Length: 151
Image (tube, rainbow, N blue to C red; front, side):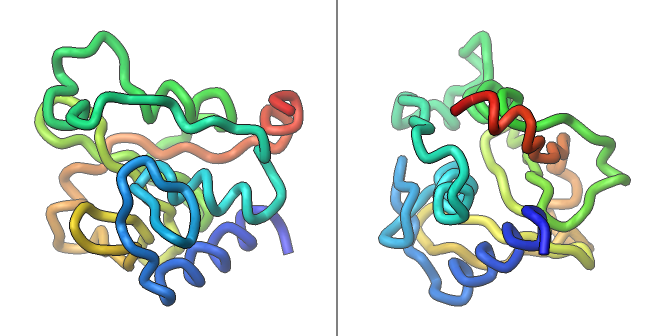
C-alpha cells in the first residue's frame, strides 16, 4: 500500500465510526474538516508535531475579511496543488462558500469524498449532482518529501 491508499482506508474508518464534529478537533473523539485530515495523517505516523492553526471561531463565516486562507496556508506546506480533473484517491479537496475556501475533504474515488461537517459527523459526500460539485475549487496532493522536511 502507499500513503494515498492508507489515507483513504483511514478516512473510511473515521466515516464508518461517525466521528463527531468538534471545532478545532483532530482526533477520533471529534474533528472539524481540516482536523480530519491532520488526525488521519497523524494516525498514519506523519506530521506528529503538526499544530492545527489557531483560527477565530467564526473565520469561515467572515473569511472574506481575512487577507489569507487558513486551510490553503497550511496545506501548501505539505502538498502540491493539482488540477481538479486530475484528482486521485487520497487527495485533499477544498471547497469555497461565498468568498472563501472554508471546507475540506478527502477524495476516495468515484466522485466520493469524506468530510466532517458542522453539527454532524465525519461522513461520505458526493461530487456528482450535488452542491459540492459547484463549490470544489482546489485539489492538493500530499508530498512525502515536504512532509519529511517539516519534521
